[in-house]
Structures are given as structure tokens and as C-alpha cells.
Image 1 (cartoon, helix red, strand yellow):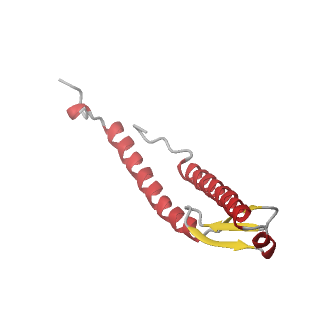
Image 2 (cartoon, rainbow, N blue to C red; image 1 turned 45 degrees about the horizontal axis):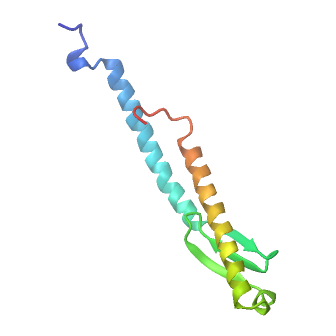
Image 3 (cartoon, rainbow, N blue to C red; image 1 turned 135 degrees about the vertical axis):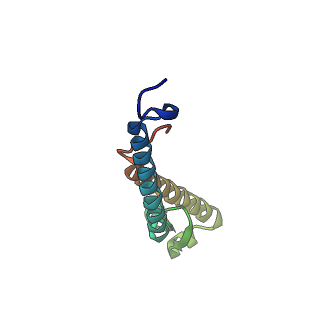
Length: 115
């Protein structure tokens, strides 16, 4: 037979630990919701051709707009296509890096059991 407070293999210390983990998980969930709203409002810019083409996306990679200078138009369709693709890739990479950094900030210092 186990000692007092050890019913079903769970001591009071273990219950307190689980309650803390649950509380931390709730905080992360609330923080993640705020972060999602923040990412939606962000504008992250990728550019190419020394600023001839700019692509702006949100913090969660949603395209917002493309800015093409008259000089870029004069380069022709093939060059313009390449400039847009490069700017899109840069905007996407910056956006995913921003999202990753913010998620790491949100979860840093958390020691959730099983994760």
C-alpha cells in the first residue's frame, strides 16, 4: 500500500506540476492568438532590382500588394517576371523568419512536460 497522498500514483506535487503546465499552456494559447492577430497586421517587404520591384506580405505570408516601378516595366516581361519572383521569395523568407522568431519568444522559458 502506498503512503498518504499517493493515490493512483499521483502525489500532490504531481498534481500541482500538472496544474502549472496547464496554466502555462493556456498562456501560450492566449499569446498565440495575440501573435496571430499581430502577424496579420504586419507588412513585410521583399524587393529586387535595387527597389525596382517590391512585394509586401503580412507576417503570416498573406500577399498584400506588389509595387512595380516604371523602370522595371521598361525591362520587359521576362525580366519583370524574374524581379517579381525574387522579391516574393525575399518577402516570404522574411515573413517566415519573423513568425518563427515571434513563436520562439512566445514559448521561451516554458517547460511543458511531454514537449
